[in-house]
Length: 450
Image 1 (tube, helix red, strand yellow):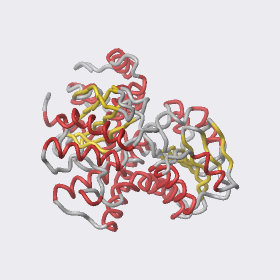
Image 2 (cartoon, rainbow, N blue to C red; image 1 turned 180 degrees about the vertical axis):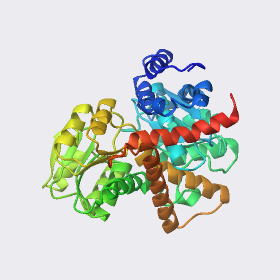
Image 3 (cartoon, rainbow, N blue to C red; image 1 turned 60 degrees about the horizontal axis):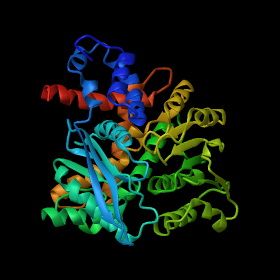
Image 4 (cartoon, rainbow, N blue to C red; image 1 turned 60 degrees about the vertical axis):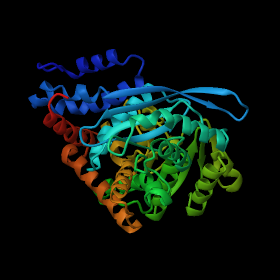
């Protein structure tokens, strides 16, 4: 964006040229830019200050080597990253992901998305993301501990309670956060809220584990309420079987809905009898503590079927919640959901729907919430954990539940403010993108060219 206006195509060509072979990052920028360009068409300051171009260029990308020793005495070498995308409205904030598919493009896309998501929460948090191409599956406790300690030995110099506050993500739960926090404290001698998702005994927050899944369902309920509907009696299809998926399922059941699917990388299970609280508890124990596979569900609950290598989007439903990973719901899947009468989709994962799918949902005028809006509950409670750490106090569960509900309701209102298309249709993607962009962009304008 020079002082003259470039169009969307020219802008995206520049993004592709500057970020070769980074398809996930380019996709994330495109999805936002499609809505932002129309919004800023008559707003010269955003063009002159190259605001979108600056948000789409991370403040810094730190890449480092992580050496560790496995139980057999072999020296292993992984690669770690921290992407600090934008801190216009607060310290960088975003998770750490340990997964063999992690690369710079994935982390840049996640940090870019996080910038808008964090802005939507109304809390003072910038956007960042980090991780390593380390696979915790099949590793012993001691191997995971050694890897986490080595990872933090490099990362610690780039983070801080007022600089960058990482959290967990795929492959990084309370155990990994504990090992990393212990190493940070050991190296620096400081006990500060430098990580969120901590144990309750040492600075963590109540409901952090449930927050992303619960928040996605609260947002879904807000969308349905605009049509005078509720989740009671609705059939829900959910992908994933980790923290977000199981807690989304739990909240849907609490609100009177019926969950019929869960999945993992091996395939999905379909339980037409419904996955109630007892079954959800079984999945939590099996996946988290036993590190088992979702296909084992059918042995425990014989009424269910397992569908290897497939996603659950062909199962007829009223509402769908993709809670697994990026680009798991493709254009054809979106068409199937619409054809089967799905009324609403709320994303629990980050960018789980590809661009074709997004366009299908928009064309069908579906109630469709992008992850930056509907899954912001997790980072919202992380932000509340930061506040509690700063105050050296803990809030009660009822207070936090109400704050989470209020934050999700506030995000919903922001989406309506900028996404109401008239005729009873709200474009939640457009609303979320513009509301998040405007908050970050106005702060950047205030700071000048920095």
